[in-house]
Image (tube, rainbow, N blue to C red; front, side):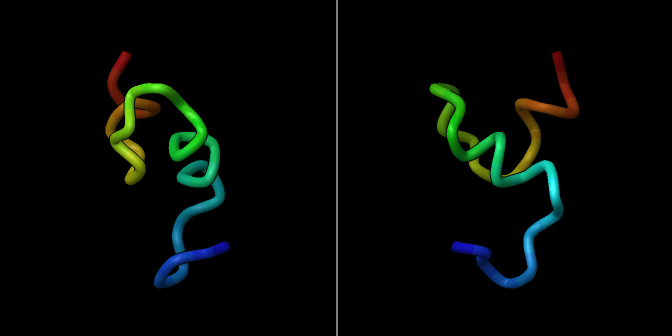
Length: 29
């Protein structure tokens, strides 16, 4: 499931409806 060694928080972002998939949704409120 990991893609190119994603960060530990990225997998959570992927599950978010935002669809960012690479963390911007988590880093930015």
